[in-house]
Structure formats: structure tokens, C-alpha cells
Length: 191
Image 1 (cartoon, rainbow, N blue to C red):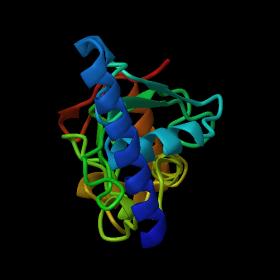
Image 2: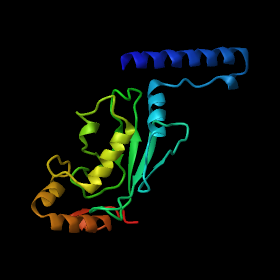
Image 3: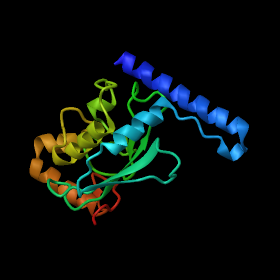
Image 4: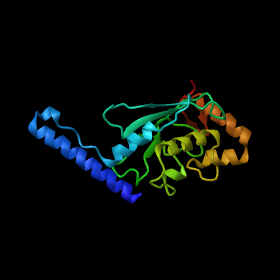
């Protein structure tokens, strides 16, 4: 793995040197931006994504592949009929550090707090450089199919899920419609 990384870095340096040499002999418009290892890895991960019909991505700045938005529209489970968006911000240390992922909507979910922080083990202690963006996206999708009450960020939602599954389902529907649950008002996410 390390040898592959060194080869990639050597290849990247060679490409950068060629671009700089070409720019020195020509106009400044010929100069290319340097590509980082994180950008190369993200480009590879994005090219390998298999987003089903329930997911899509948006790049607000087409020149910045390290920041994008993922949309998930669950077609089954308790969150069916909703549309949820997540910002992905990837640091130059990727893949050695996981992407920073936040839910943009205020939703009622045991694994997503009211500020949008996501509790997903591969975004924290279980992250490994061999994991890719697809693994994160599958993990997010799974949170909508099977919310996890044993590792919560929203403790009240987790308590409802553990103690009264039917009540939890009603609360999810009410929150998704833009209603209030336990005195907290949520954003309408129904499509």
C-alpha cells in the first residue's frame, strides 16, 4: 500500500514538473494547478460510486471536488418519502482522515444530532485509509434503513426507538412533515 502511494506521488510530481516546464516556455494560462493526493483519491472514489436512484451528488463549486453535497431519498423504511442532504468536506489528509460529514436538515434521528453531526463509526474510530467514499455513503443510507439506538447522538430519539418503536415511527413522520417532537421543531423534508 505504501509503495503504491509512493508511486502515485512520484507520478504526480512528474506530471506537475511537466506542467511547470510547459508553463515556463509558454503563457501563464498554460500553467496547471497542482493536484493533491487527496484530490486524486477523491476523483478515483467518485468515479467508482454506484449511486442508486435514491441518491445524487451536487458540486456547488465544480472546481472543488473536495466539497460536495450528497442527497438521499430513502425508498423504504421509516424515513421513506424524505429528502436529506449531507455536506462532505474532505481535508488534504484524506484518505488518512475521514471526510467531515454533516446533515444539512434538522431531523429526528438517533444517530444525527440537532446540529447535523452524524454518528457513524467509520467517520470516527473505525476509519481506515482503505475505506472509500462509497463506504461512507452506504453507511449513511443504512442509517435511514436501520437507525441505531445503541450508539446515539440524539438520546431522546434513541430512547423512543428502544422503548416504543411505533411511537418512534410516528415521531419520525411528524418531524419529517415539519412538526414538533418533544418541544423541538424540525424541518420539513417530505418530497
